[in-house]
Image (cartoon, rainbow, N blue to C red; front, side, top):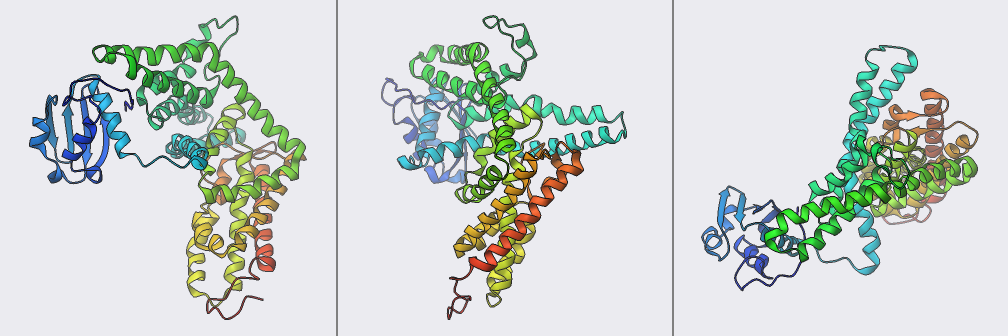
Length: 462
């Protein structure tokens, strides 16, 4: 979607004049009636909740509106090239929530980056499981003719993930998604091997998702600048041309090298951290993940996991971070046993435990441990202990990584790989889970409920 904010100097009453978006919004039934806004080359496409609330006659009569096409909740307002992008951006700004306070800007940025990758998770999970199955069959020398087919099915998505990241980045940060995809595609194009970049050679995929993200951000910046300065008559041709050409060249002659170095360093750093830090590194990582879940920032780690998978074939961080869920399950079980008089809370725990065992911890976090206070901290302690065990075993040479992201808990077992094969990685991960369950339970049973009142409010739990 084109989302520029360039000032215009059109005659009053014509589309492109500041305030045109507000006038159209009123005729569309107000902000509460608008479900979504998009634009193509000449048309503003609006989906509304209630078509009866739209003043179609006034829309058609408005100066500068070249035509209106209505099809139930879908309305197309023909404004012409150039103008339609400006009006779409104005409408987007009117429909957007108010800016976040300054202290929350960093958190907002992380959430926006997370939004780029969250839609990719189902495919990452599916392809990861297929890749794991292909690896298992290859190791067991079973169905050799099927292994290449499974590898192709699982690898196709990963080979084009940079394109999807480019698309999502431009969409999230106010550019035209397909232009973001175009520059993201440069990163994985096989022909980059023929580019002489100052005497250095390029390889397809160099820089991975980080390179694609940076390229799409650059393309969005170029596009929005062009929308402000390029005359309307040339906007349709010049803006896409420059928004692909300039970021594309910068990607080839700079971003791919820089992002490639960052990606490689990320893989080396994660391995170094666990090889040398061992239990201490795992302890800290396991302890910190639940607070990230509580703040909704855990999805911001998806680019890191994706980079590790691209560079090394698996992310060694995910099995450790998954220990936070184990600590949460142990803590919930302790609460269930100690607070026998609180039927509602025990019912909540029983309903949320199956999801918790599969790595979906939010129901237990928001429904049990966080409202009680201290059990949240003891759950973090359980996650720290589980992470410490996995980190220690990694330091001893028994590595464990996940070939895909998304699930954790028991659901992560099919996605594991390590230095000792699938069974060895499963043993390492299982040892961490059992430790997390036990430590979370013990810490919560002993220390997590001393100041929690019983359901009747008469006395604290002893």
